[in-house]
Amino acid sequence: MGQRIIVVAACALATFGPPAAAQNWKPERPVEIIVPTTPGGSVDLTARLLQRVLQDTGLVKVPVTVVNKPGGGGAVSLVYINQHPGDGHYLATNTPNIIANDINGRTPVRYTEVTALATLASQYTAVAVRVDSPLKTGKDLIDRLRKDPASLAVSTPTTLGSVNHMAYALVARAAGVDVKKLKAVILGSGGDGATAVLGRHVDAHVGTTSSVILMVESGKLRVLAIAAPKRIGAPYEATPTWAEQGFPVVMDTWRGVIGPRGMTRDQIAFWNGVFAKAVTTDTWRQAVQANSWEANYLDSEETKKLFDSNFTEYRSILTDLGLLKEK
Image (tube, rainbow, N blue to C red; front, side, top):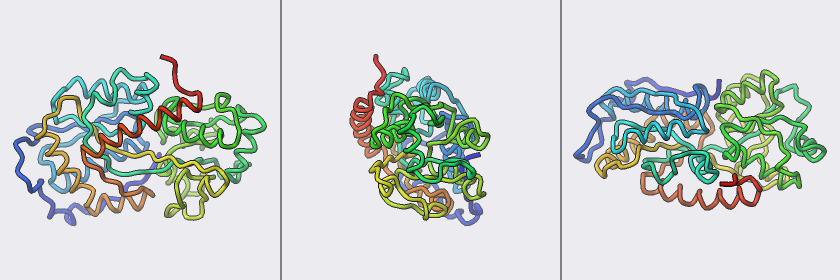
């Protein structure tokens, strides 16, 4: 469960070849894309979309496989790729949780100990409930939390202090709710969270818009609010932002790619060229539109700057919310 990926025929992309600029390095054996979550969520399906684009366009000439290594809020995947230092054949999809978990000390690998390669797209966090839920609006959810912060079990993958958890806590704090009393349920992916709502194991799910898009389109889930700066596209064009409902919270949860520590300049240059072309393909552009993503490509250097900026921002948020784990 999770999001849909729109894929066009490979023949429409046959004109794409390898990066034009000559490089001193290129993959010589199969490439692995490591996913830090269980299958089915938006992080996993982003990796599988990227795999399809790289293979179908010929941007990468060797086989590309996707390998799920969930656990520790992403720590397992980070430890794995760093077991292959300086090896450009190992990549991993990642999210802002790489920064949040570093701040909270939940991972043995700091964000500065991997190689930032690309930011591919942005998404915003949403709050989803079953269509038969008594919660009809974001205000309904806030009213419940004001009466009893622990009255609602809400999935916020994939760890405490994650971007999803921060978004939920920021809205609650804006409403005057004690965020330390919120009942957050930690699951392995956004797909797991959406499924848990549908199965009545939790009351609501806070995750990316793409993690619930199929269930929204099929009429099984309803989104109460989105932490976006303005309303986004179908099927969410009628869904108000949190700001529209009186709670000015915006939370971007980007999707990107990292590599192990110690990658060379030539390896980084090769992947910069590949990813820059991958996000211009029809396959990628259609997926961005179909999943209510925001186009937001950044190369390796700009992604490193984003990491540093997020570190400062998230540390401030987690401290203010009283959610910073004691080290």
